[in-house]
Amino acid sequence: MSPPERSAPGARSPGPFDVLVLGSGVAGLSAAIRLAGTSGPERLHVGVLTKGELSQSATRWAQGGVAAVLDGDEDSTDLHLADTLAAGAGLCDEDAVRVLVDEGPGRVHELIALGAEFDREASGDLSLAREGGHSHPRVVHAGGAATGAEVERALVEATRRTSDAVLERWFALELVVEDGRCAGVLAQPPTGDPVVVRASHVVLATGGAGQLFSVTTNPAEATGDGVAMALRAGVAVADIEFVQFHPTALHHPAMPRPLLSEALRGHGALLRDADGQRFVNELAPRDVVSRAMAAQMSIQGVDHLWLDATALERFPQRFPTIAASLFAIGLDPATDWLPIAPAAHHLSGGVLTDLFGATTLPGLWAAGESACTGVHGANRLASNSLLEGMVFGARAAERIAAGCGGPEPSGAMRAVAANTNDAEAISGRVIATTSTRGSNNIESEPGIDLEKARDRLQRAMTLGAGVVRSADSLDEARARVDEVADHVGSAGAGAQSGELVNLIVLARALLASARAREESRGAHTRLEFPATEAAWRCRLVHAAVRGAPGAVAR
Image (tube, rainbow, N blue to C red; front, side, top):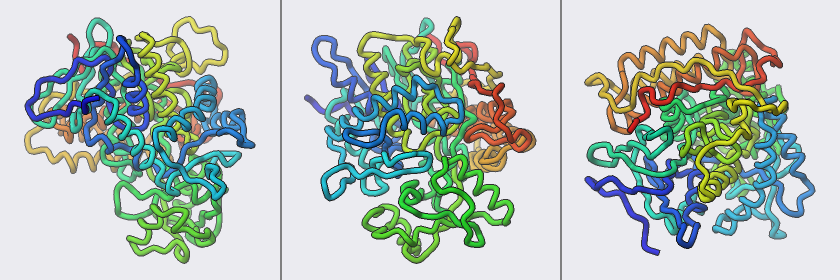
């Protein structure tokens, strides 16, 4: 096979493609590899478009492992399902979770067949760890805490072998909509003017939005681009008020914040307050631990707490990536308690999909952190995210290859499906979609300092929509975000300005959802409404009139 096409400065618009995958993380590359594997006269022409290099995705930052019940394990998929439902606080779609736990083991074995190397015991068996919220050790890791890097390495190598075109450093600006279906994207190449990249199907796999917050474990690229494009195009988006904060991010000026993996607590590391006392079950779900930490920091008037890993044996050998980062800043986990504080980590909601990744816009598919499959509900179970990307990226690919183009009333999509009589389906409430201020291709004010504007937005979101929220804090955050928007307008075609516009769009939608949900559930905590209420067991859905400013209509 000839090598993939590469984007060239000043080149004509690439494509058209049968399928264009946006993003190069685990979900997008899982879909691309499967689609490129079609053969015969029906072989699909597949392109991958990413705003950085192919290997530059949030996946490679993932320290947590992959949760799956593998062959010969004493564990069961029923227990994995139960743990996921418990963490999701009543908002998981059980059918979607069943798909995840049943198909996940096969996807892990496929990844191993692609060359991914996971940690093994001396016997040769895969080494399994237990993480927060899991009732049984079922999490596989690579390099102790370098799982994402190993998963990404294997997928990138396979993608370079199989995909027809890899468009690196291209920035997707808007979805192109023709006759009620997605027909490609308007994208900014590395040089030159924006061009339309046409495709019969577009797979959104653009990752999360940790850059909404000033303290995050996510890389700088995690700006919610796919979800923002979907919002502007009127595609249904749900559950975005549920932002998971990882409790054990290293309290250090580095950004993204170095992550002290859940696996450390799974192996016995302890959480201690400013007085050195334990105050929470270290293996509770992440939302529980983060809330407990926020409360304890408030009571003691401190900005961080401690992770005590001094009792863990062979730390440098078991967790070489974490050990290297700690040694680099002068910390020795064998003797030092490690300073920690919660940091924005994972967006549990996203573009609403059915069980096969189809969205409310025919021809548009979503998978991974940019999707709302219903798997995570109100709070993601540790190490389910890489698995979700593998499973639902593959399912979208299979559905596209089968010739399907639109959604069915299954999974989380039932929240907006008409005439569903399924008593188990979680209903949806459509809330007013906030203004997107037009498309992502209008000039901003001349001389605007985009970096400072982004910092102001992030600080406002951290203060007002962090681990604990209130009506006042959310309203204040919205006022500050609006001030940023008033100065920025809608940015020009460059990636930096486009990212800021996307953050503004997503911040407004997230704040609207958080303001509307008058209860505490999972990763969403409201001071005025501390209880979880049965009346709020629903999905809050943003859905605008398609064709509004932001979708490139043809």
